[in-house]
Image (cartoon, rainbow, N blue to C red; front, top):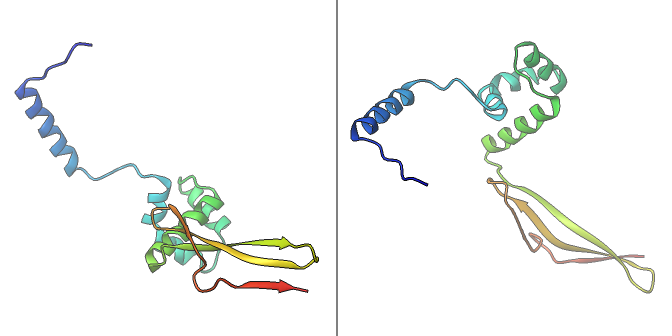
Length: 133
């Protein structure tokens, strides 16, 4: 493949074009960015209406979004704004031993951090084993 070369004049023209583009306001947004931009208005609408009605209104206004998508993004942004960026879930396992007793063991805690990456570790405050009779 041939190595393409560009003149200094062409590079300067490209730099000027990028500077002009950087000054222009953005005109295209993802669905999540749209929900974030409209968050306060959506929150106010949800005081008296459900997600289906809010999504339908957005559809009428030309913003195509499903009820479930609206709810997911809204709740995600709400968590981020409240500072609660982690979701924690404790995984439990039920074991039936030979004497027909059921033992519940907290195995691990799965935590999702702000970046959406899952981490795991021991349960936050106890390693207890419960026996059911």
